[in-house]
Image (cartoon, rainbow, N blue to C red):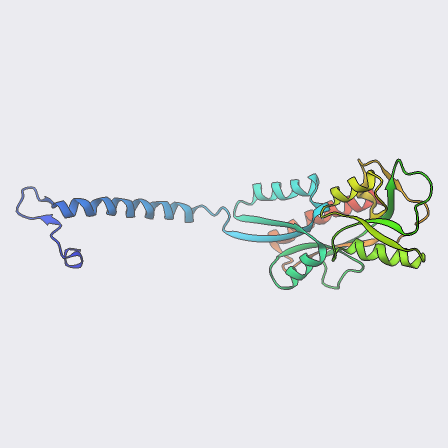
Length: 244
């Protein structure tokens, strides 16, 4: 050390020997280095959060039951850190296929062969509970932003009915869309299970809407990841059964 810093660090003439002024200064750094070493050893000795599992899920599926699954899993498996992202199904699917997510739940018209499980999601058209009479033509629609799965399905069905339409309100969340329906701003195509708790009702003229599919995908199918995927699937199954 003395050769490295070019200074005497120990007064060898003293009895007992003691550090020089430069040596005392170096001792402060040495103690901090040793403290950091102990801190690093302690951190690496605790396995909490060393493994990262990235999950993508549509915004309307982040409910209490799903959150409890994540919380309970994190509590019992401290070595795993869950990183959950909510978003649009198509964006989440693209990120999963690109390897940016480890588990993804997506809504689609048909499940891909590599899905771990899939469940039908009953759909229906909704209007405000206070709506009276028929809607005008063109029909005001309440939709998600471009890229949302329900948005394109709405347009297809309205055009099949040979009706004209326009976007009266565009919302980034399911809650915002349902609030707009409640307010009577227009019609919207939504999962039946999502309407609970809102002052909306099914629009009788547009019935017989085919279900969407809620699918869960995972790159791994064993160990703790399989356990987590299974519990997420249980929540989806209960939700889809209740919504049917």
